Length: 232
Image 1 (cartoon, rainbow, N blue to C red):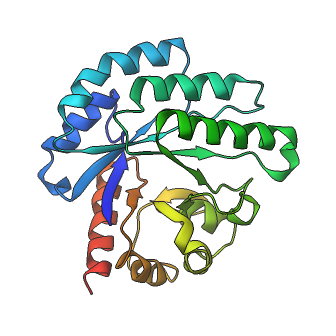
Image 2: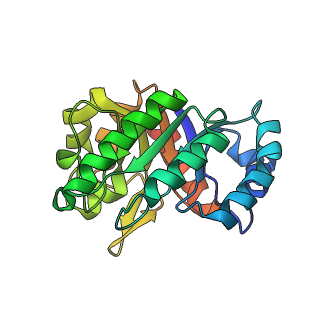
């Protein structure tokens, strides 16, 4: 198990956040960063490419993964943006995560599955499918690697521990966060009833654990909670 965090902890660019995380001694346990790119238009690409040299300089400190762009109402835009991002940063990242269309999307699912296979093969990178409220784990294509998002599962009234038991062999990454007042990306706390089975899974897990918090204090709370649980 290796702890990652998102590339947004302070207002700033991807490289500015990476430098901040590297400079924060309380985050010494974070060994990787998931680069968030929910869109990748021309402006985003210019900004991200300008950050790449500094991100590459930090590869002795961090591993990287990619959160591929999400395009609602796929009309080929996902194919273009995801391919461009992998062209720019595929060699930098050890893996990637993508959202997958719901069952109601029909042909978009066929196109997304084909694109996922093509990009994974072309760039030699594992692309895990992330569960969402619209597309829970049971609706994702079988046998492909998964990124289990605990916040999405909880909002969908699914127990993360049960999902880990059912899909554990397919899970290559976790987006680990809690919920509060009907919202996800809440810090992890030891009193959450759903968390102990997740901690048990983590003790023998060798993949990426992305503590998906976008605030330093929430991240620190969550890191402490997970480290305490897995050390039992």
